[in-house]
Image 1 (cartoon, rainbow, N blue to C red):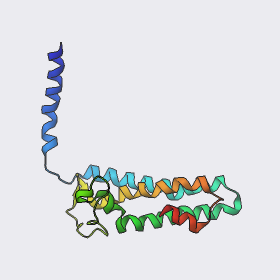
Image 2: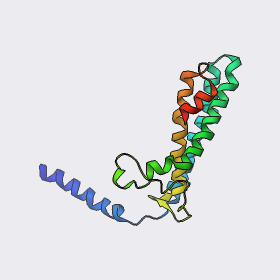
Image 3: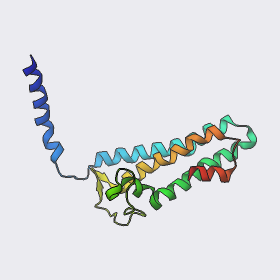
Image 4: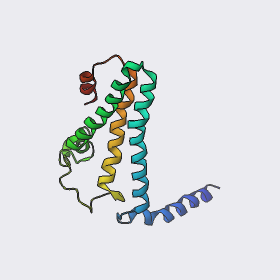
Length: 157
């Protein structure tokens, strides 16, 4: 009985082995899906969350909430490009368990041939950035009508 179960796992391993060792090539389907997912997450932030939170506040604070979500998108995009992506995804040497390096700050070595897995690194950069954007934007609803705009920017940055 146990031998039969082992054969299932061995067969599965043999079938998946070529996929595991194949060289990284651009996969257009994965790239299209990640781009679609990136757009959907970004739309969840700018019109989605901002309009949702605008509907929860008093009419005098609607513009403030919309502006907070938009400002978070701008600020986090700049911070992500300037160094956050690098601190998370670059090689940090001995400090790798805690922080990455700064070798990818402002994306100096990224070109059209740069791949992360089987998608372009620029697409991966944008995909991860949308989640960095939506994270502080989710918190806007907790302090809507209670926090100054400048304090919100310091908190988000």
